[in-house]
Image 1 (cartoon, rainbow, N blue to C red):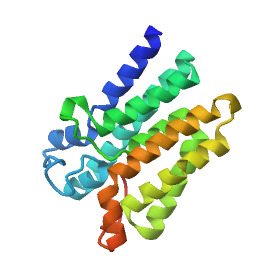
Image 2: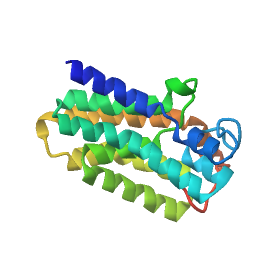
Image 3: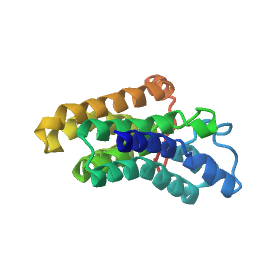
Image 4: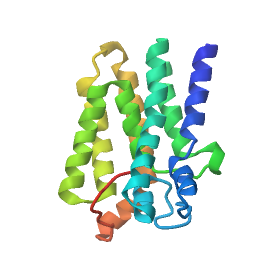
Length: 202
């Protein structure tokens, strides 16, 4: 029980480390919470500083989801604890205790969680994300589409039938929170005013 609680807490704290804010501070870029889209994510860092800081941010945000899931697997925790670990990491990214609970929108961290849960799930979701990004060149739409289909990918690829409901439930919660965080983007998409980008990322 203690190990499970510590793992979930550590996942939240790791998720609370904002890659975008740290990268911008280290590279002398504006605070992503006050410039561009005001979102501390890789897409906004791309706007503010270009591909290199955006790529570092993307990797950092993904690792925040991947590492706790990997540790959970190595510790052999129950499916319920593993799902709670993923949710904790995701909530840490959205509502980081270290940065005034003002976090990013969560696509990269969610993708890291999916790769950490089971790599074929992460690969399938990433392929959807990349396909939509390449065709439509709209970062928010690629993220929303891939994460809307993520519960289906968990259902298709997760091999442990006894824990499938738990893992699909975890992903449904993540998808729901992610859609909520993208509500302004959804309004812009419906209005036809959402930004198009050459190198979409999150």
